[in-house]
Amino acid sequence: MLLNNGLSMPKIGIGTFLLKPEEAEQAVLWALENGYRSVDTANVYFNEKAVGRAIKKSGVPREEIFLTSKIWPSTFKYEKAKKAIDDTLARLGVDYLDCLILHQAAGKYLEAYRAIEEAVEEGKVRSIGLSNFYGKAFEKVLANAKIKPVLDTLECNPICQQDKMRERLAKENMILESWYPLGGKGNKSIAENPIFVELAKKYGKTPYQVILRWHLDMGYVIIPGSKSESHIKQNLDILDFSLAKEEMAQIATLNKEKQRLGLNGFIRALIPLAKFNYDKQA
Image (cartoon, rainbow, N blue to C red; front, side, top):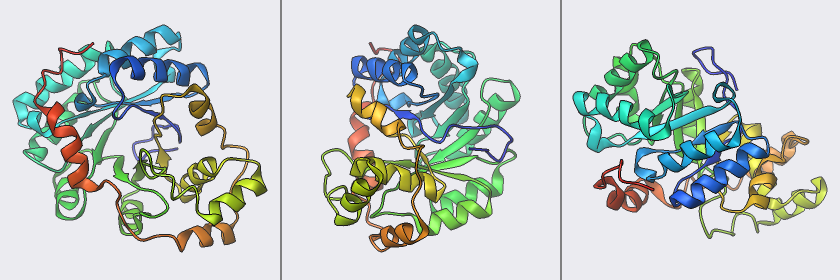
């Protein structure tokens, strides 16, 4: 996937949201061993050290991996953000990040954005991203940015297709990256929809693979997470088919713009971690 700064990003990455350090380390190692070349983590996932260990164990050259992390609003004041960037690199054990993301539209996000722009100039970060930025906050970043963000990471799946943000991002030549691309943990209702069941039979795939293929055909980047090696393999095995226009139109009818977790739920899930000392992780 070509980004608006000229860099390329894999369309499929391994996500580590809600994975414990040992789970994240194993998942990232499996992913890299099976051909993934994009890894997504965050300060508040509390597993960056484990992700860094997996990258080293894999033997995959650093320059072949698109590595993304995110800083949390508690570190958004300018000086704190500068330190958070260096601390993130240290925990991951790398010299640079391919993308560093502002995790929420909260706090002093413009100060943090300025700190990341300086990190780009210093060679510590190659691309800047947003996560869960909509409306006024999104527009405020664009109005003040010297370096345009390359993506916005949003909750997105067939019942929450983010039509409005997709159109807005396209105007800025920015990528929509989907979190919860399958609808979230424990949610089988989307995959059990007859549309996906029938398409899975047609293409010899699982309904989940069809959903992930839908994301790619929409032009989205996906970062599904899993603790299962077989699922990690399956999530990558979606490049040998694509959905027809009429099939995409069928899936479009499922859109309710309904976020299963939503921004408030997402924040509630992570607030307990936000007070932790990020360096004190396994």
